[in-house]
Image 1 (cartoon, rainbow, N blue to C red):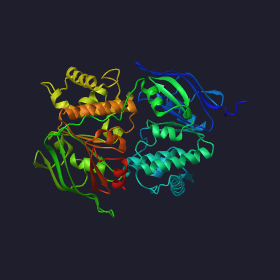
Image 2 (cartoon, helix red, strand yellow):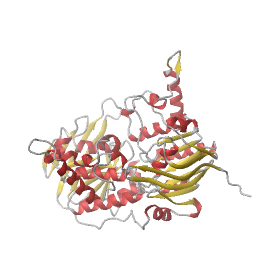
Image 3 (cartoon, rainbow, N blue to C red):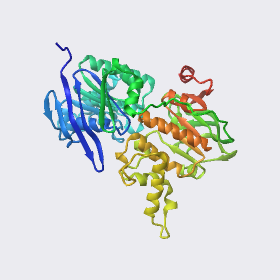
Image 4 (cartoon, rainbow, N blue to C red):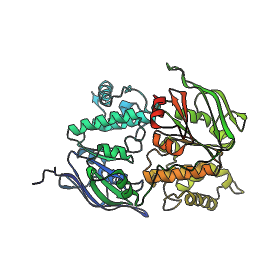
Length: 504
């Protein structure tokens, strides 16, 4: 007699069509009550689409969804929440100009005598944040938070629902190691309470640390569902991509060229903060054909350093920047672009994409002056041709350059942003955590592209929250701790242990 718990959720021949695309094609599998079920697949495999059906975002799929054995069709997210299902979206879904507490209770505000009961909401918000070992003030505006803290607010928002099924879509994509460990403790407590968790992640170490079973999707189809104990990360990766890949392969060693960028004793003030400086006395150099990595924990100053180099810092900094030995001062990002510097930002959704523009318009955005005709009108044929050449060169998977940018997977969106900046023909490329939320297959493609660009003479300065990524890509790795440069490693001397020791 079987001792397995009954299925809580059953997906039966689920199909989801969009114009020109079949995002899901006859997907069938079940999820047992109380298990942590991992959903793996490349970006574009259909993972997030399936979870949006389960959470009531997409309401007209073909096939049948059964909850506790009962055929169910959600007509909106409130229906899913009423059925005990909550989701943490991969892309942050917060209102920047509201406080943490207001975001947590958005649409479910607590009132007293017809007025908002802010005291009660602040107390409840503080309690949920405390469950995440998070000491953020509930009155803080979300726009002032870094990505990692915003992700914790997203998690706290779903905990308030006390849902029976919790969907976590790339929940650790912007978290530090300590924050990931904290999330693991929260997950363990949720499972102790009997919660069912659907967990989407590209990180095999997370999947194999947490999951009971693993379902692999590829190109909108279910490939296989396996018990964690009966498979391996290599097998899951092979099933995901349908081919053997080695994303950890390093690029051939090559001799870098001349120094293109120098940073001399750069310091960035931090008014009103006890530390006084976001960055303090940073000096570094970057050569043509070289990839230099910036490692450090969240808050170490990685993003702030790249923003200073791109003229996007909100405070004037001290120190000197030199391009080809000549001092430069950038008061605006356009000045940096004109000088041959490009920046791919950390936050793709808020700072990289223009959601109301299509794929082609997102790619050509920095080239509009070159696309104007005699009457200063954009020549659409040339714009589409330019965008099409970039799509082809970078291998962007899209129905056409006229498709909505929001319909692309995270990896393909990132290729579009990278393509936008490559059209400016930069000498220095700044990459801020460029593969956040990108699957293993797309990562391998981005790594190959970055290596190829360096072979052509581009100088790359890259930050990453994943040390294996820096070890894979970089010729040298610099380590920041609390805004100060604490170590520099060559490819031969860099190890995860040594970098972490310098970072903490």
